[in-house]
Amino acid sequence: MAFTDYTGGRFVLNNGSTATIRIGPFLDEDDGKTPLTGLTIANTDVKLSKNDGAFASKNESSSATHDAGSPGWYSIALNGTDTNTQGNLLMAIHATGALPVFRMFEVNTNPV
Amino acid sequence: MAGMTEPLGSVETSGSVKIGPFLSSNDGKTPLTGLTITQADIQLSKNNGAFAQKNESSSATHDTDGWYDVELNGTDISNTGRLVVMVDVPTALPVWQKFEVTLSGTIVPQVWNQSFRRMTRMTSPKGVTF
Image 1 (cartoon, chains in turn red, brown):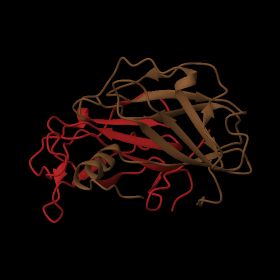
Image 2 (image 1 turned 180 degrees about the vertical axis):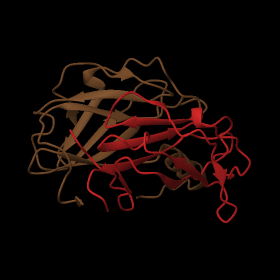
Image 3 (image 1 turned 45 degrees about the vertical axis):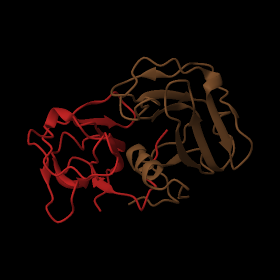
Image 4 (image 1 turned 90 degrees about the vertical axis):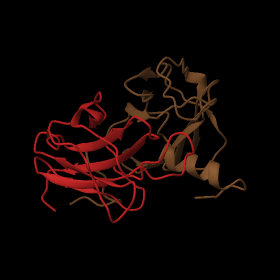
């Protein structure tokens, strides 16, 4: 079955396109409230489930970069392989020291 | 472009959804990868009705980092409107996700961020309704 993110508006990605998305906030796993601004989030830490398939590391090789303007939020680059499957794209990240964060996207074959 | 009222994909009556992350109820942070989540543990509320176990008989299977695959069948998504999938098993914090079942039989999730929920739990003792 196909489904799309319904939280705070959908985030649509074009099939096969590159994209840079923001995800967060990454909060300290011990106090549950402190934004973590210095995390190392490698591409292997960024797990993608394409259209409900098994999680696997993102293909695009770069690490996430922190957005200084919004503590605890990080930018993550995706490439065409990461977005090559129509339907749901679930991104889950559990970085060391942080609570897990995830977000659902929709990959669409029709350009938007 | 498909909109919320124009679900993507073909009309299907069964399939798998991911739910998680399941975290330890003791420390609120450790992903639990070896949970036994049976059919009876997977409670559904169809269009705001009373919770009842899912019809599809299989248990959830672990994927990664506390995320589990849950199979749903046509009976599970037989009612249009809101569908809440809730799992509360021993040693884990409860997890739930909201979906919308459309007339076509396609479901649209309303995803809940577990860490955001936990943040709320820790910083707002009286609770916040989202």
